[in-house]
Image 1 (cartoon, rainbow, N blue to C red):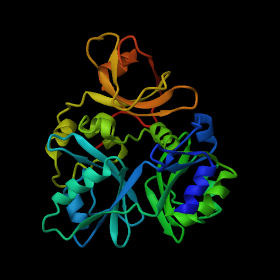
Image 2 (cartoon, rainbow, N blue to C red; image 1 turned 60 degrees about the vertical axis):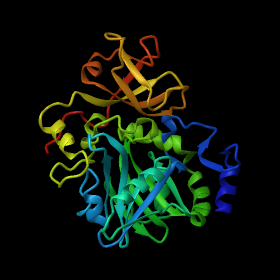
Image 3 (cartoon, rainbow, N blue to C red; image 1 turned 180 degrees about the horizontal axis):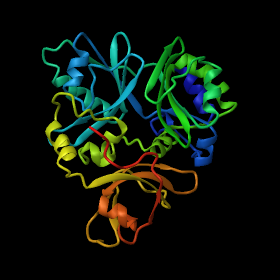
Length: 350
């Protein structure tokens, strides 16, 4: 990884106090305009678990909110892992190759989640391992991204949540944002060190925060350490994104997730907002002016927007969402400015 790390340092990647390179962060926060025009983000805060063995698919199928047994080699899916009470412990992007099924999740959650899932393998022929060594994750999006990628990969995934594998790595098209496709590219560090300089010729360079900002504008949430066990999947629109399969078999929390869907008990959703406060973080509470004594919701994800504040996905009561007069932290906090979501918040057919 030395050449890769050296290149990142030359481009302004920050080094943590313990001298460990943290390529997740660059000094410059990309703006919405830069994301829309075209960007490449070095994603340093995501981990990768591989699940290998004859029973890998059936094991995960019984643990996650989505169908794993019918996951095709040319696709990717979102999936969640819930507590028995239906609260999300993690959200994943998952895909497979001929040997393994892969789960991408925040690096901060990986050790505990990998250990917890391993506890339930029992006699199943499945083994979980850290698959992130030597793998670089790049996120690309915006109007110029397709042309930049085609200089290196001839055939791109043609729809969201499809993927292609080639000698340069795995390329997954994820949810579109800001009017353009987004791609997750996993490739060896040695190849990344030669390709990233070429991508920079036409794309703005960012880090993990830029990738998170693009995901926020795609309306795709991710559970982090500060929001574990806070949300039933529907509270953060996860079923609207195809992350929950209501026709599959049981998994931890399945009964509560299904009850929320079928009995009309869902009274919360996630919305896209801008907040003129650079300190806003995931896990922060928000308050409606009509009921300032108690929180009406919580920030799910937030990322710098290049304009001095953050853009965020915020989970809240539907009544508060309809009211629209919501503040960060308290009734005296910064107001939430609502933005159009990239998809309707109506329930889908199940």
